[in-house]
Image 1: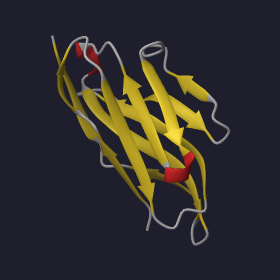
Image 2 (image 1 turned 180 degrees about the vertical axis):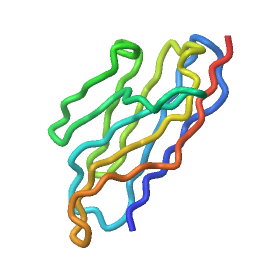
Image 3 (image 1 turned 60 degrees about the horizontal axis):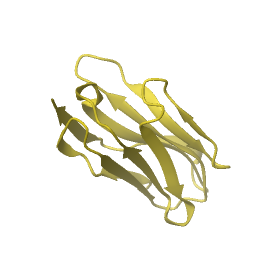
Image 4 (image 1 turned 30 degrees about the vertical axis):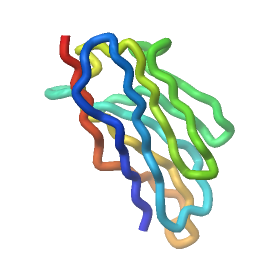
Length: 120
């Protein structure tokens, strides 16, 4: 059973920084890629940052320069550093991973989400 558990969200003021973490646990054979999505109230879930198996990163245009995705491969953990937070960043942030397990092969997994609220 694979689980993704996010942490690090909270209520912050505009201009503050946060570091979100996502730990993947279970019988994981390999990690193809890990991503961060977010969903604001009344809006669709959107991809904000992606890190691939070889360490390449991609960002949504709206967060480029303020968000930094990184990972600790040995710990199956992905991080999202968010700087210069804006009220528009308020959303539930979800971790997503494309993992390979011997029992299920490649599958997509989601975390339960962590709330980030930015006050102006």
